[in-house]
Image (tube, rainbow, N blue to C red; front, side, top):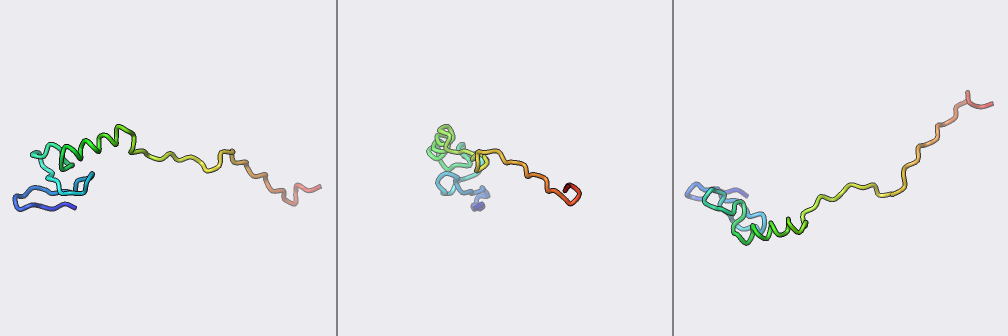
Amino acid sequence: MIDRAASGRRIVRCPACGGESVYALSNPYRPFCSARCKNNDFGAWAAEAYRVSPTEPDDDSPEEAPEPERGDSDRQ
């Protein structure tokens, strides 16, 4: 959620705690609301809590190619 305060500053939602955060040069922790939220997020990142799950096939065996169908011309 982005909101404009009466002073014209952008107010955004802190990605860590969900509280209000001033998104301006006056906030050294932006987009976070505080040093605590910024450090908690950095700690989670450093501990590899944020991961992209690998895309692996469900079955470990290689898929077999289907055998070609025999038509009438292949019969003896």
